[in-house]
Length: 124
Ligand code: FES
Image (cartoon, rainbow, N blue to C red; front, top):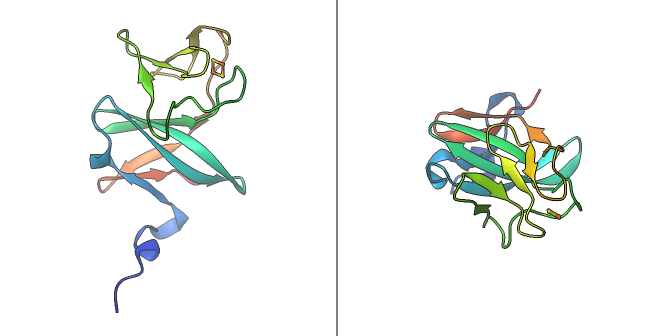
């Protein structure tokens, strides 16, 4: 009998593996979906060395996804995440919008941790 893959994606304590760290290029992005407060929410994952930051993939401007195709995010030459819809630019250190139609607002942060080479939702 083969191993149940979904079982292997669960860790003790209910933490869910979103993606393997090796699947995200350093300085690059990935998308995932996670159950947050009972709702399936789209996530942006951004890798910075051995750490990953995550936000809801919902632009504070008009509530659209920021990627132009699933998992395809724009990064400016200045290192900002750029919403593919109307061009709002976000600081990847903190998710704050620094330019564009929602300047001063912020992406909603989602707590994730890197453990054993995997990116996990940091469930309470
Ligand atoms: S929806 Fe992102 S800038 Fe308008």
